[in-house]
Length: 296
Length: 296
Image (cartoon, rainbow over all chains, first blue to last red; front, side):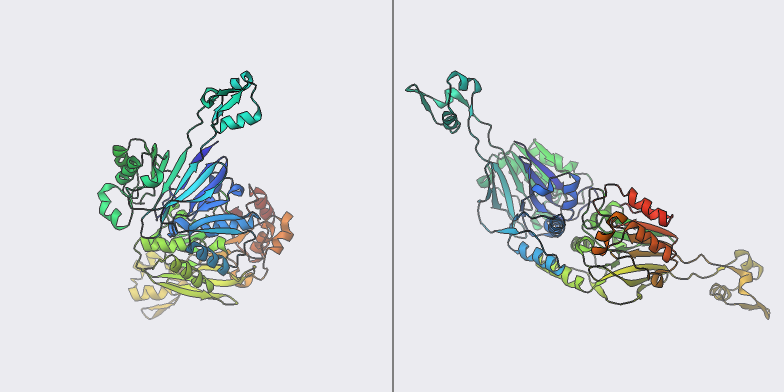
């Protein structure tokens, strides 16, 4: 099952000619989930051939323009494309008022339904679930109410060893029980699950953290996450500006990756003052080696 | 004096990976004037190195999302960049309510002034003027109140022939009079202006017409325009859809160029259904040879 993250925008508030402001898709099992929706998101979605029609869930971290000003165009375009299918939006409450006001002023009447799920939990909260995947929101700290998101694959079934199916002439019912980790009985003889099965792949996870002060309590929410995206708006030389604007430095992002025991860190939301983000990457790598930079 | 048009977006409502929705700059004497401001305009402005800081005047044709959804991000970015200088916006009245509402909901307090000039004239109307240039609005016909814009260079002074300045030992005052087309008197002898001067360059002009039905009365407003941008959303095979949606076909755009006696036509605002706009270009060229296609 594919589980990919596509960065659609990696700049902070001011876009550059190379980097759009924040938006990402998580592609799981060929279904895209959109995180944040900055100006230009619909163009980026097309450019990177994200399957538009299969997009059903949008997660918005907070209501700063550089994370939401693409929502109007995207909602309008869905309409022009004849969308009938409902769209789910998970976002701070006021977003609904913002897009409804703009669409109304523009006389844009949507022909599809939006299910709006306001985010307001003060701790980790499951906001989405399907057969394979769960999405949680958790609070971050910025100049505005803000949430991080954790995409967590569900625990998979155990894998029944193929040769054993024939050897023991297993029934479908027995296979299903084995997949769930149960022991079975064959010819009145109990057989241990682990003799017939192997461990499934470890569930994979992705956490998105922007915009935020560095929070050393994040291990409460995302401990052991496989891939962590953490904002790194500034380098350590601007630590006081970073603190003042409720952002994180590259080094601080890397410290968080260490604290939550992430496998890999991806830094982004770079200030447009950095023509090259190499210094930010080096700063992070000194603390957490397995770090890469986000590029659109 | 340079007088250039830069297309920032040439698609119609649905952008493609190649074409952003509508925005253009007219660069006159190295000062940019922005026409329409679709989603992504600020990124395009950066990409094409349009001098951001010198942008003082924005002209908005009508209030469809694909012409205005970049205004929020642009106004915010000016703020982040520390703009102090006032910004002039010429647009249908309701735009003010739209951007003020969004910026307020987003708690974005602008630190510079916006002078808002509502467009509402039913005929050609001068809306901007400086030493060299005049901008006029004129009504078009679409599903929404819409205006075209004419950028018209002012009549230039006559050129005094350099050698004559020495020959006749002309004073500054006399030179200024000659530039204005007056005759002068030298040693009590009247001298005709045309003996000392040559004609100035013909004033240049650019007209922007989108979104609109083809209007054969446009020669009232833009007769003899040098460069005409006219929307050509569809080809003639979709003429009835074009009419129904208040747009023009490529052939109709070319007819208008003929009627107004334009020197050159540039067609744009292409429907995203055209992977190549070559058929639209050919259709227009059959009617008006000097046609080019808009590309971002």
